[in-house]
Length: 288
Image 1 (tube, helix red, strand yellow):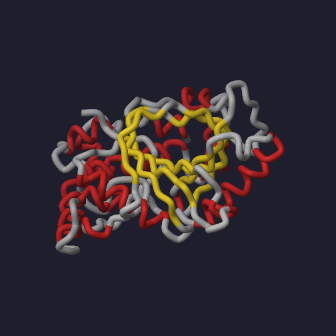
Image 2: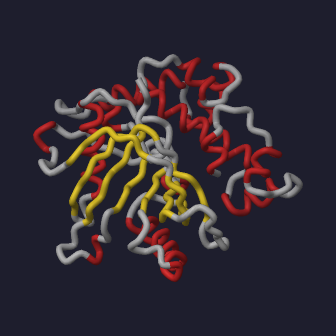
């Protein structure tokens, strides 16, 4: 799944996808469907269409033809046909409907991107409602090698909690808890992706050479230029803080990249005396 997500612009071959997971291609399509619930081709096509839909309203100036090519479609005609089959309308109608929906919402809406820009469904906020304690900076983040547990389903406490419960059971006996960075990674945009298909990864940093046993996987959280928004928040304030982070992002003229966003945790709020979490919301940025 990660290999496909990071190579949507390429002509992906089943042999290459299978090799990335250390399988032969002979039975790989059956294995993939049994685990993921979609065929390899269906999963790849859906991610390409969702990436294109995301770009249609997050970058209003980019042409539909360019979006189609950059999301792995051979032509704008093939893209338009697949898009209509998946979303029930043409790409241009989709872009227009989203713009009209946002423009008609409220006088204080900051921009289209403030509401539909990344891996959480967002509500644009008027300037005066931002938290005074939010700390923001643009930072070059490193690559992180992490062990992770993935859950697929609606973003929220239940899905995230299950992922972290399983990760902690794996990482605790290895002495990683309290000594390694912990992350929550969000791959999909629920304004585009059906909630039941959204991917959440609970992650903990691990040293090179770490061996996983099947309960957890290994991946690299790609570094680069990120907007890092720091918060001290209660457990029921995560959504509000995501909203505020993106409102700040848009008001300062930044655009997010296609890499997943993540939360970097500096404590466990469930164990803190005041119940507060210390969290950085990290949003990948396009260069330029």
